[in-house]
Length: 231
Image 1 (cartoon, helix red, strand yellow):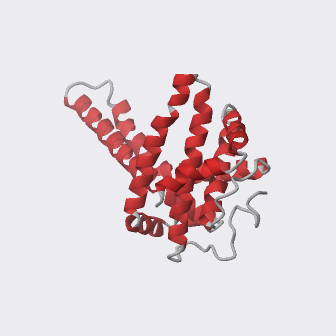
Image 2: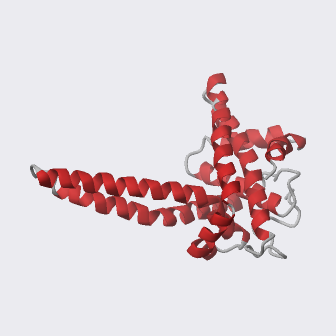
Image 3: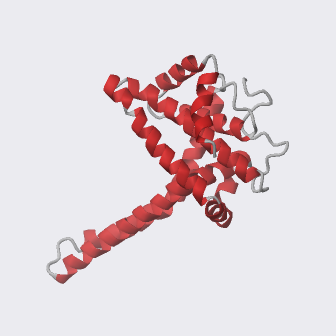
């Protein structure tokens, strides 16, 4: 994983400022803009995975980017559903026993804390493997590929070090993006978008690494990118 390259490559596109500004402006739009921006990052990462890191994708696939972002959100939501159910199951006894006294009330609290705590730990695991989850869906051009649980966990196990690096870089770039708040709160949307452009390169590197092992059916399947990444 080449961290230095993930930071440098953005600035080698002569139109990087314009593309960043468009992405930052779209980030202001609730839900729709969020999905479009997420889809753009996915398109960028897919380009990198296929060896087309430059130029940065043009902003000319708003509908396609929206669908890519939406699909990624749906995939992660489905992965999170068991955790939501688990937390709800833990909360149910707590609600039913909330008016009880003594041992019953203490037991309800244990149920609640235990279920929510376990669900939180499992959510951390989902976040950790999310690059693999999204990558399987995107690179195979199939939502179903994201739910091959055994394959996802195997990929995550075999690439634990790169995934840990991704988590560390996401945290570091998130902190760097806070400079936008210092300059002006509005600036955060632009610095945050720039940070995720850099993080997308690392996603692409990971997906390329996995495709080299035959995990993803790249080959002639160009996934979500066009033959010419500029379009």
